[in-house]
Length: 374
Image (cartoon, rainbow, N blue to C red; front, top):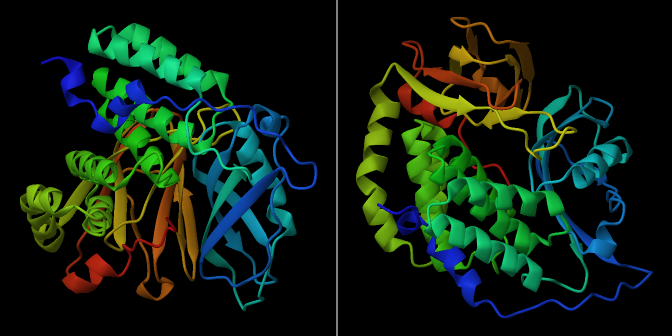
């Protein structure tokens, strides 16, 4: 069956887009704006905006970064980890650099479970694609239609390398990269790209009907890789989108199977692939996951899987990846996120254990939570 049959309908609209951006006049006083959305266990006292990188304003590039950090007992933010981004090292570098200036309320111990979304935008608003971006996208679409996968990959990588995108274009670009990954039969890459496109949350690029389609695809991919905790959260997001009734019906059977597995299986196994969040030398390749159970281990590592860190509301633990070694997150630590670091493209299995001493319902609900701001 031709590759284009499986393509997302939302990217087809690029062929009919007629909006071309004119150069934006930048005012010296306030050329850009920020939206910092913080969630976690620490209370913010002072949270300075990061700088706008280099010549990104002149080029019209916008950025989005999701970052995890730890707050110390004396109210400092430390150990930033980039979980996701719209791409490019500049915005990530600026996000990391501003961390030492942030201040939080003091506490008796460090608070490891803290996340921020930093959205950096040109203040005139640019929720449209430029004519150059549309032309590049059409060429990639044509290659995919003709099953010229290598040519589609080259042009897609080229579009990414050019940079200068606004957040609307970034969303469409990650969707396009996801389609290329799918055409190359790389479902792990497809899941990564589609997830990034959705997390950027540009409603102009992904209106509600397209958001339903995208979330359904993400749910099915997470289910394919047995990432059940993530799949449960994705379907909950799907349920909240207007017009999702048919998609909820289509996914109901698989959702019921996942619920049964989480309730009864002694071990569930998520297949994981490490990626570099910005596809750049400055990024730190990782895989992050909010587990549904409190006891976990690792198996079947392929490539360099170096270490992990579990960041919980009240505690964090760190360790090396030793197949067969089991780790447990204490209930009093609250919600947790597990971050695994290693080589870009390395794979492993993340095993979640249902122990005899745990109450089934508590073990399923005590860790997993959609604590990430949209």
